[in-house]
Image (cartoon, rainbow, N blue to C red; front, side):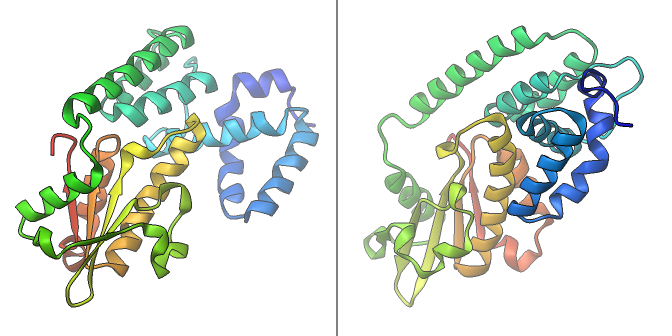
Length: 253
C-alpha cells in the first residue's frame, strides 16, 4: 500500500530518492510514462513529482541525499535556493543550511531571490555598460595573445556545422574564425535563464557544451558570472591537453 499524498509531501526527499536513478536512466518519452504511472499510484500530480525529482537532483549535487530526523527542507525552498544560487552561487550552501535549521522561510527566500536578481542586473550594467559581447571577446582574446583582431571573422553559432552536437538552450553565442582554419567558440552563461528546474538542467548542459566546444574547436572562450565556480571545477578536472583549450573569463573582464 502506497503512503498517503500528505505523508509523501512531508517526507518527499526520502520518498523520491529511490526513483531518481531509474528516472534519469530513461529517455524523454519513457520518463513521461514513468512519472504518469507513479502519479496514478500515489495520487500526486505529474508536475509535483517532477519538482520532487528536480529538487532531489539539486540537493544531491550539493552533497545532500538524506535529511536528519526532524529537519524540514520544503521543495519550494529548495527551488528558490536553486534560483538564487544560479545568480549568486557562493550563497547556496549557507542558504540550504539556514533553511534546514529553520532560520529561513519560503517567504524570506522569495525576497532574497528578488534582491539577487536586481543585484546581478546592476552588476552587469556596471561591468559592461552597453559593450557588445563581440568586442569583449575580441579584446580579451587579443590581450591574451590568442588572436589578432584584424584577422578575426565573426559568425553566428547557427552557421556552423557543429551546432547539432550542442544542447540548444545553452549553446555558444559566437564563433570567431581565424586564418589556417582556426576557430574559437565563445560562450556566455549570463544569457541563460528560466525556472528553478531549468537552472539545474541548464547548468549541466552548459558544462557539457564546454566539453563539446573543447573537443571540436581550437579554443573555447567562456564568460562566466553565474557558474564561475562550477566551470572552474570542470576545467580543473580536464586532461591537460583539453584544459589548455578553455579560456575562462570572469565578469570583471
